[in-house]
Image 1 (cartoon, rainbow, N blue to C red):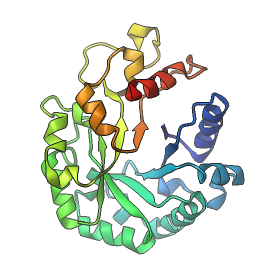
Image 2 (image 1 turned 180 degrees about the horizontal axis):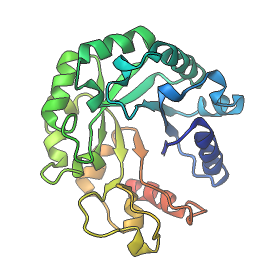
Image 3 (image 1 turned 60 degrees about the horizontal axis):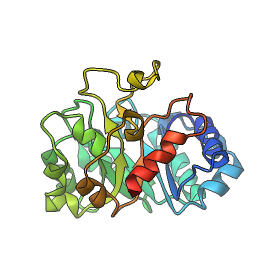
Length: 255
């Protein structure tokens, strides 16, 4: 499961998953380095509990595509992040491909300097974004940064009308780098609000739970992605207080 929001949001969601017995073997948390204050962003209990998970990663990003090279305080913020990763016992950082559109070698040098003991996973872009969403974009990044790995987001693939899952996994240069899968249903090209159809009228997420909309990926796709750690990214409605659909999403993957 992926936890979005501020560190406080992440801690609240972690507690909810724990209370509802929906905490799986791993989690990914999403952080904006420029908004980090210090090691006390997370409380001691969170560091302790999160570090016990079998699979754990941190996604970093920013609304500014070039935040790693343009931010005046990025060295200070990445130093804070590095200390956090150590206490969380996380050695994997995920970052969207579009952050490497300009000066990829310079971006890599920044990451190498401040996160030297961390493995970087590049995530393919979606939502109609040009850079970072195509196979060729990813291959170019890996040519520039050969030690980087791939976090394949299947929802982002389906954000694009003419892209298929096989377009990506049939390419050796990409398939051999896959280390993690992001799993949700892309509703971007749908003409109706799939959550509203189920009674959740205040939601229209691009990343939807397959279990809520009543669809399932092909057996071939499920068989492939089960080879890797899978992060569930579909939006959970507040009305589902028992996390029933999240639990069904896990069952769907295992079926």
